[in-house]
Length: 194
Image 1 (cartoon, one colour):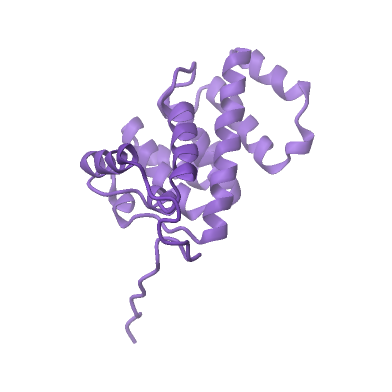
Image 2 (cartoon, one colour):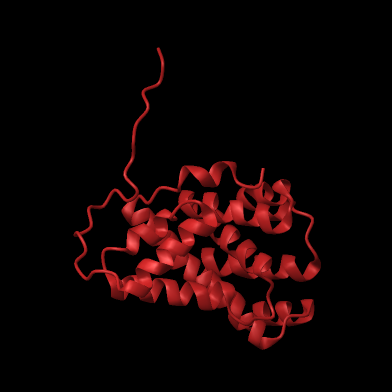
């Protein structure tokens, strides 16, 4: 018997229709995303019902993932995938796993981070970064000076440790919103950079 195809909504939680409509600038942001990627990521569509929430999400994302930092764009995406792996977040594993494949040019790295970052061929500095992001996600109450000292010993400066923590914290929040709303990844992510 053939499996039935089932269309799932972008977000299973029914959100109000444009409770606070997007601004013209935000509509342009969506148009640019579509132009660059060929689609509008469902995460953006999930916030599009409320311009203030959309602004908060996109501004924080853009600052953390694209702003000035001692972490490369790839390293920030590696944190996103590692945190999402710890949380089993289907949306972020799919979307950010694709971005890791794209930025690294290595489909294997994207899959390793999705499944178990410890299997990846990482620098000692990157391994320390991901160990910290994992611990912050799984056992935040255990984080102490020993964890920060391990990052410093690996070569991270305090400003960069802040960025590692901020990216990990953001994706913990994003993973929980995804779980709460059953947000689904765009189909296009599955075949990107393979």
